[in-house]
Amino acid sequence: MITYRTVQGDTWDLIALRMYPKIGAEKLTDILLDANPDYIHTVVFPTNIRLNIPDADVPVIVNLPAWKR
Image 1 (cartoon, rainbow, N blue to C red):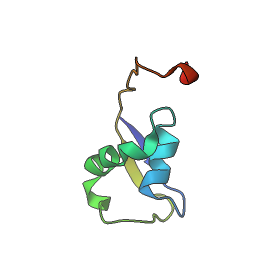
Image 2 (cartoon, rainbow, N blue to C red):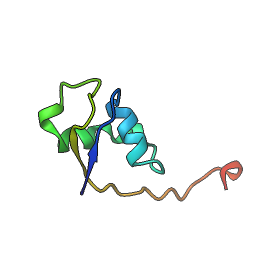
Image 3 (cartoon, helix red, strand yellow):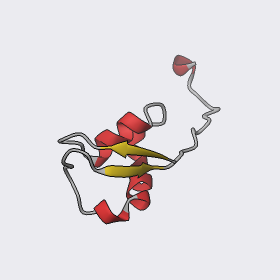
Image 4 (spheres, rainbow, N blue to C red):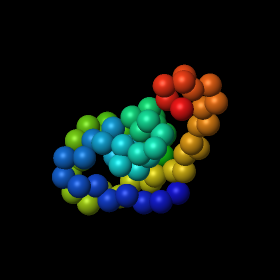
């Protein structure tokens, strides 16, 4: 787990996108919320809030369509 310091205007989905860029980040917002229950009702962050960023497994997709291979 790492720590992230917010920037003025950060939102949960933007933080997820920054922290998990290869995973389809917005889908992992719930992981961030679970790791930071004190801020669960925060929608837009001020500067310098420390958030816990847990590790996330990168899913392996084996049945890609031909156009994505």
